[in-house]
Amino acid sequence: MAVYLITGIAGFIGSSLARAVLAQGDQVRGIDNFSTGKRENLAEILPRIDFREADLLNLDALQGACRGVDYIFHEAAIPSVPKSVLDPLGSNRANVDGTVNLLVAARDAKVRRIVYAASSSAYGDTPTLPKHEGMVPNPISPYAVAKLTGEYYMTSFYRCYGLETVSLRYFNIFGPRQDPTSPYSGVLAKFITNMLNGEQPTIFGDGTQSRDFTYIDNAVDANLLAMKAPASQVAGQIFNVATGKRADLNQAFQLLKKIIGYPGEVKYGPTRSGDVKHSLADLSRVENHLGYIPKVDFEEGLRRTVEWYRGQFKAAEA
Ligand code: UD1
Image 1: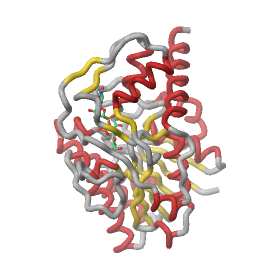
Image 2: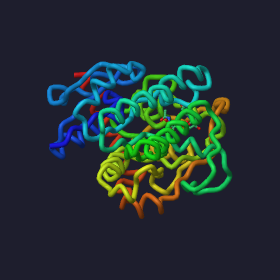
Image 3: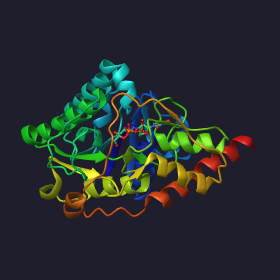
């Protein structure tokens, strides 16, 4: 039985990975500082994991957390473009300093591999679509710069110390347990909960901006594959994690309107600073090196996500 450390385990993606690792019969240790994660996300798995409340800026805590660990999924972050525009120092501390601390602790504990939650925001507004990993990055927001810096550190720790690292550039991951309540929440979590509550969602801009929206189960698959692939195929490298298709926000709203049966319309507000216009992934590299193929498409992912939030609302009413 291997020991996995998951940083940001109380977050949306970390808590999904924890369930997947437990399901394959391995041992899970997790850290979170609850800056964006929630204890509820761990609910029924809490008794089965070794959970430690800790901040990535606490190197001692990380050294303790890495002891005896084989593999790390590094999901902890302050994952917001607009928040980083307001607070670039906070974004840098959590996303860059925290990542370097973890790498140092992982190196010293002789961890076998670390898979890092990188971001497609690294591509920025490069006009070429789809985005492939060989393109020169062009980050816009401080968040994008911080996430890209994390990738460089991953590759550096592989080159300098032989610590196996893999960076996965997530493209707009959505699904159950994504927090809809913060002003910085992902657009689909916000839209779905607005519409289920009979409230009107807001599109920032004209709604023609598009994203390669990726259902969580696809991201979990990619992470498990990245952890298992031979080092010669993945170590020190960067891969897109997406579906290879995109939808604009107007289309996403129309699909949700149909799935939810929402009678209202969307309203439009000012464009958000730091926003990227279009995002779409080329998947050839991740397919070739990891054998990753997205299994759940956008519409099916939306259905499952709506179903989950509906269940939450019913549970809260009961
Ligand atoms: C998202 C992720 C980020 C990830 C990046 C790349 C979130 C919160 N952020 O950033 O961690 O690294 O993808 O995959 O998941 N919008 C509205 N109305 C709203 C909220 C947002 O119109 O109420 C718009 C935004 O202006 C933007 C689009 O929806 O154009 C997507 O926004 P968001 O969900 O915040 O994601 P990204 O900024 O793309």
